[in-house]
Image 1 (cartoon, rainbow, N blue to C red):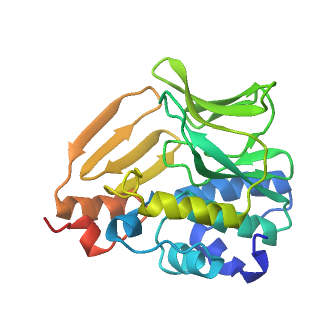
Image 2 (tube, rainbow, N blue to C red; image 1 turned 120 degrees about the vertical axis):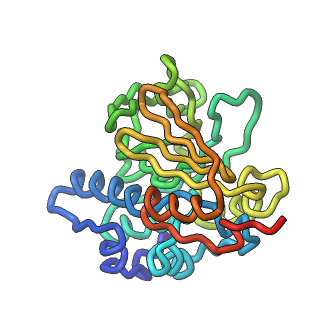
Length: 263
């Protein structure tokens, strides 16, 4: 299902600058961190009107060959192929991104359940996990300066991933263990990458989570938030945007039409 046989594993490992170790858990954690360190979250193609292709050769060409980033479907489908190739058991899941919003929200975020043990997510654009988290009730981990925990509503089987922000636990997303397939992600991605009400179609979004900084570009606004919630924000000129993408977002190069939009 995850097309690990189509993956150029050596090229991917070179891209993220990591080599597997004998211990499977150590490797999973190391790969998770290496992927986040090397490949940013970004929606440049969506803003530019370029269709998002979710077949593995296309994702690999973009994120590995062209050294671009992507959004959740691209990141987690690529990571699923890597784990599949390395012999891990991978199940796709879908989550409802909450981020403190009230009301009903659709399950549009892709994430992974690995070896029936780990919640794995290298594609969340809202300040997510740096490492896999045990997918069990009340799981808790400090990852760098960030803290995460899982809450479970037993009657419904709904898990909620939370992070500690502004002196309180904040819901990031909710999900169940109901499996999803790449075909499910293709339908969801089409909506998110084309619908005018999608948060991804209106403006540039770039994000990178580090041990002690959450870096975000929203349109031309650049913010850096630390685990103690201190935030600095500044507006970037097109030249500054290009420079910041290179220095603070792993050398990311976006199409000119995205960094210098035409009025």
